Length: 541
Image (cartoon, rainbow, N blue to C red; front, side):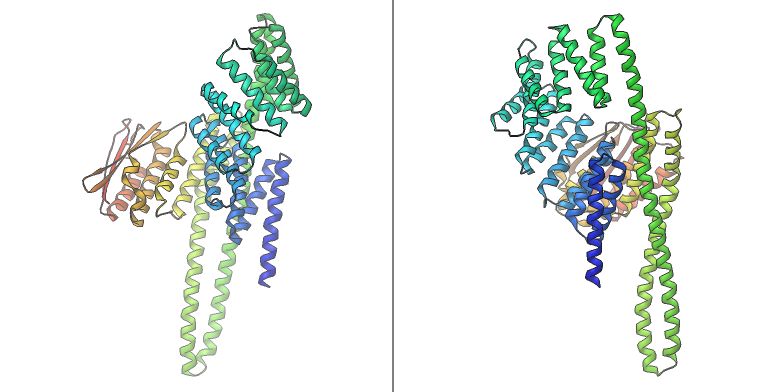
């Protein structure tokens, strides 16, 4: 019976995963997101860490495609923890996702780091060639053309069987050579790459070829440049690639006379408006997907809580009947019964604690997130609200969700704690607020006791949450050093500080003081309205 139930759960998890993959190929991201999450929950029950990691990898890619790069980063890191190096192909795919997220956020050095990790782990030459080409493109964005050209030349020296990849490398190399020296003749290579793409029917590749040829002829031959921009516009319209259409129209407007360029400017403006509307709808769609899934999970928790409560009632009735029977028999039977009852009461207490915990979490989800999600959806449906305001609301909801998660999550202590702590900091690092370290390695956090590691993690999580919610800081600096036989960690931001009547922040600081005192440490802080915030933490190693 047990094996039958286990096989049924395994089959269910596999079916959910295959459905996620099916909808992913159909570009139905909402359904794919739902089924990958369902598969993840099933594999969590089965304790299959590799499959959990694979599900999370797909979820992270979908979140990235929706433009939610911070959430995608968090999911990708979680995926890496579950896979733990056991599946190289999935691990490389996760690092590729992290690289894309970094590049989209203009964190080019981070993007190069993650692409290199993907290359080191990947066992397939075709995948490695793609990652190397991507690194070359990142160096192009950094205007390090020499480094970019070197990578692409080395790639061409290898035998590349995939024609699309080969055409991409040839085209990129020619374009970057021209960017480095606009007087160099690269037409032959650009045309050769285009011919391969035409032969392979590589539509997206052809758009890139037309764009690069137009750039090359822009100053040399206006007629040819106009011809290739026309081709680029035609193909991008067929592929419904709005961004490529805008690029082609802007270049056509710049190459034409002022009178002829008007229609291109008008069409470009119209497309930009459409793209903004599309992005707004995409953000709303993603918010709705998450809301629907979380509502389903809350309903499941509610029914599980009711089932637990009914089980408790049934246990009570059962125990009462046993009491009547046992007390009617001999004293020895009564003593046996007392031992049994103690065991049952312990079991009941565990169930009650579980019920209380689940109810508390469900209440926090409803009270703290329910109204916020409803308000965000209302703003999305109302065109009066700006996209930036809606994104800020969604970011606030994400921070609240992460705060609840951090409060209930276990903390990874031990030899890898420093990396775990860096991941916490990285999760709050963004374009809106940069976080910088000074001297963290000198503290040797991984060698601290488990108790101190937990306190440090909790205190800084509280600081970051307060920073995100209240301070409006754009820069945070964490300075670390040894002072005598003590370790010192200084948190400083350039936010608004706080006033004396801000009870929430003062309560948070009180909680931090209690935690620091528990390890015989001290916490001093300095904060005034509009003058930033500083907290100094000292404790013995």
